[in-house]
Image 1 (cartoon, rainbow, N blue to C red):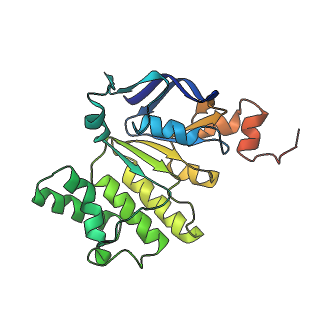
Image 2 (tube, rainbow, N blue to C red):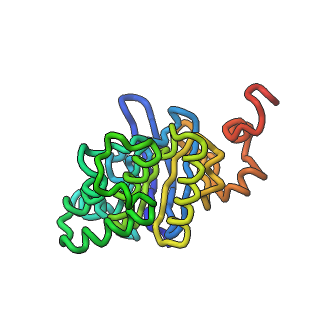
Length: 243
């Protein structure tokens, strides 16, 4: 099932076309990894899909419903975003996880139930009543992820959430995220520069270059049949300059 679709998406800044995407979709229960070199348009595309930025042209659809200015906030509330930096507030771990739920005025008991659930699932229940200043990078990102998942989103955006973590911490968090996301109905867009992360999470792979989608398919399909040399080089199968 298509949860989120973009059709005819263009984003023009000044005289430069940043994005020119004919069609893109996120599927229920699937993780789609978006990859490309710096400046390819990944961040702009993610922000447009997350309804944080308006495209110059084109249309976004949420479960078939056209996104308009009237329903924008309502639909945005059905999404969640995890950034590269955790962006935690100077309060307790529990209060950070509760933040989005409080802003959306959930009942107190439901806030507690959801918070307890995701603190446990992310393995940070023991940190609940402590402050965030002395958390490790991995612990802080687990708090950020718990805060997002507590909202019970239908679409989740992961913007390089494992960058900067040491190898063991990153590996364990990737394994835990795979367990949490696979088997759910959440449609996930996952942006990464570390292609070793793709096998852990991604069901689908989308390659973007110069604002255009140049290839999409399962990771296995793209690894076995790259469309052209630019995809090969992007995935680092051949060193730059190799022909």
